[in-house]
Length: 331
Ligand code: TYM
Image 1 (cartoon, protein in one colour):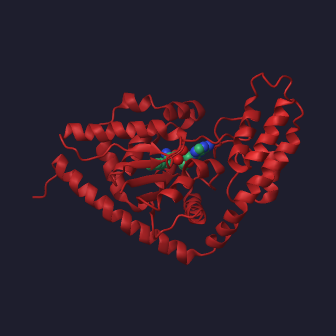
Image 2 (cartoon, rainbow, N blue to C red):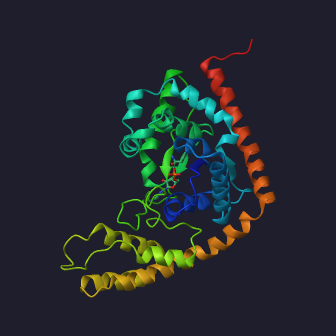
């Protein structure tokens, strides 16, 4: 049985990118693997949330995990900061992680560009913390979206380096995974390549959005003035609309709009209306569950403490063994 680990940062409501990139896989993988899914609240500190926001966002993600079908009896669901063993492994891995390789990481370079006023050490060492999350349970598979591929490559580097430095075969090589399918990247409604929480608020659709909000956002999605020549490359906004439609609409609907694009008769307004309704069909049941679960504090507390206990058992074993390998010996 494979050991599966993955996490999501609590920075607000989860969006469709989080669902198709990660959560959908989590739900499928919990059936046949030994799964650990966590809320990466240590990671979210790189953006300096207030204590109230931090706690609120952790609760939001826990609720949304459960609403999407994660089952605390099948998978271990926990909060990263309930596992200080992760922080210890992070410290240990940092001793063999080199500044040069961390600086070359695409997501770090991106942060330097987008938030030059807050390039903290947590951002630089983000990949070692992520590696610690994964190898603390000695994972084999890590369900993530395409944007996390490089972080997984770095995780393999750190795991292999540990094995080499101490001449052991202790950590497996974890791979980015999407339940047997290709890794995905869900595009934004604003013509961006990736739907993302930090974009403008109209670019992402959240699982908890109301039908009215979804209709409004989709109708505002960026398009172009229409197919002057259907053989010319499509604008990114239009590519994104078709891509989103392939996730939410039936093959017949998709074909209908493809055909009308090809014949030059497409009306983007009609396509958006259809897409919005298909997204609403998908999110409505989730939204209902989110509202019910959010009110059940007792259950959430039970899930979090049960998960913390199970995760700690696995992490404590790894840390015990790692300490011994490194040479920390009790007198
Ligand atoms: P985060 O919180 O940014 O995103 C959580 C998951 O959602 C996926 N995702 C997407 N997938 C497809 N299309 C999109 N537009 C899209 N946007 C987000 C991400 O790929 C991710 O799988 N570093 C991680 C959190 C993390 C983690 C880990 C993941 C911390 N430790 C250990 C796996 C294992 C992150 O920031 O994801």
